Length: 151
Image (cartoon, rainbow, N blue to C red; front, side, top):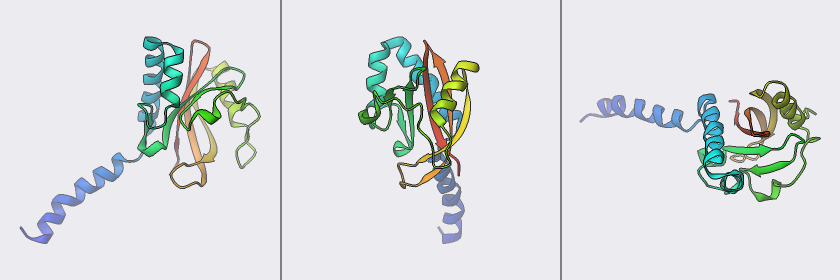
């Protein structure tokens, strides 16, 4: 086979592979719904443990996409970035632009029950603060969510 023919075959496959590495809004929403379904089937504590387990089923794209759970007062109950965040009240946490993103998350949960909100957060892949959007959904009085970085 000649090089041009091989390139014509491999380039689309490479593009699909690279595109598949990016988290999408649909995948983010689906991951939140999967975490809620897991909690319904296995109980809160089992869900919190699995969500907080780094590299577990609720971690995708090398840890860039993960689930988090807050109570309605802004306390972290489970977090995909690890156990060090669990138990901490984040209600007053602000992003680099001064946005109280957890407070916004709680307001959205209390007023609409689900939806998207924007803020900035440290991307675990490169350590930079980047624009992020998160989908949250309330189940059993808890806020389940996951977010993606805006490219």
